[in-house]
Picture (tube, rainbow, N blue to C red):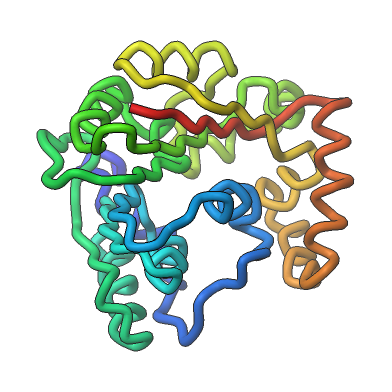
Length: 247
């Protein structure tokens, strides 16, 4: 099976249509809206940041463009190649990218002010091991930002997310209590928990035909959409959980 080859071929599939780009995403980018909202509250300055599971480098390059020194790790060799090409094209020498098999990683070099672990833990058999390594790699009083898919996601509870989870390599989903337990269990102190992404936003990513509409949500419409979307979270439940924790 594709997943059994150290995940390389499996995750390269998701980047086969990707290519190097000529510009950084805006601060109100729709796809990265929630994590950017968290990040933009943190003075980046010359912070040293580790982006675990950086993909093609979209978020890493945004951080580098805003003054941070960024190290991006990903299991996809193709994604890392694309990230390096974009960094070179944009002349962002403060963003460096490395191929790492996150399932079998043994150590992480460096001491980081911020670690981003967004949509990664659910792909790993041993999520606890990665969290322990990330804690060691985090500087004193450093921050970690974690996001995972929620067990309470309405589409998941209705039984319509199973094929999606299999297709993207999800091994599990988390409740707020289970992800908190995992993070606190390795010694982090949780600062803030965010329940985000209603059934509306989640549908745009889970159902390919609906994803067509994302390109029309731009500018001021992004904020309006997410105000409405967060109201739906309060009614129907979240599809995504963000945790900000401190060492």
